[in-house]
Length: 174
Image (cartoon, rainbow, N blue to C red):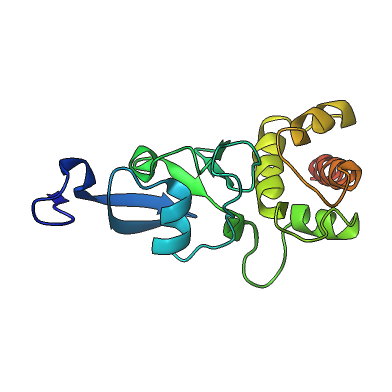
């Protein structure tokens, strides 16, 4: 279904009804095709954990998982996410307890101002799902994809490696 945003306006601005699967919940959103996923997540769905940084796909602050893979939400139109599973940083915590990855970031002091943290968390969550046995060199290469001006990256590498190590140990116990 489409609906004109403004009578007599540009047809490219017609709004479309989308159904987005975000953090396991279906959301109906009426928006213009040109709206980015990050804008819809923040402004229409109120999921402000996904941050807007450079809006050019460089900084990684807007990283979310799309069908389990890290993507820059500022580079994807919301209409492109229809039919896919979107996970934001809000999906990591059950509302009562932080996830193991979030705890590892806190334990390793892998955040300071916190602006880049949601992007790093989602980047790491997607990466560890694919590469649970990642070593420090692989993790170091991974984190180079996102920008942080506060931590110097080593605590982030330590946090991700610590989480990966703990997850592997937990799997061996089970």
